[in-house]
Figure (cartoon, rainbow, N blue to C red):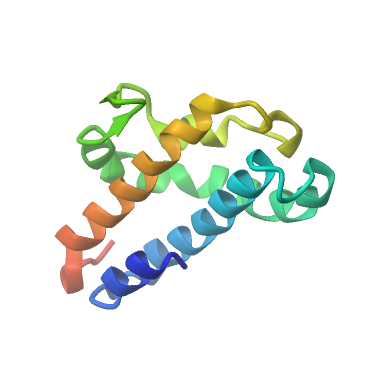
Length: 127
């Protein structure tokens, strides 16, 4: 898990959300590595096929919870108007990642939304 998110998650007893964050971290790492050329799309496929369907199935549970948080973020220097989680989950194959600058610009919004939610929820989280 992202070190800062892990730190914030220490106060949370919401294991289901923390599992979502852990899987999101894996997707985020794959996207970054493929985009930067540290991993080929073919090499990322197996990992992508594990996390992507799980996240796609689980995100609707967290969508309303995370919406007010991602709406406070910026992507490409502008207020985020598109759900960045949905935008990234729309990438159905690592082959579509290289050159997708818009996706890269929205990754920080997802991380910020996750972290803001963890800060706000602390050990009160019970979903």
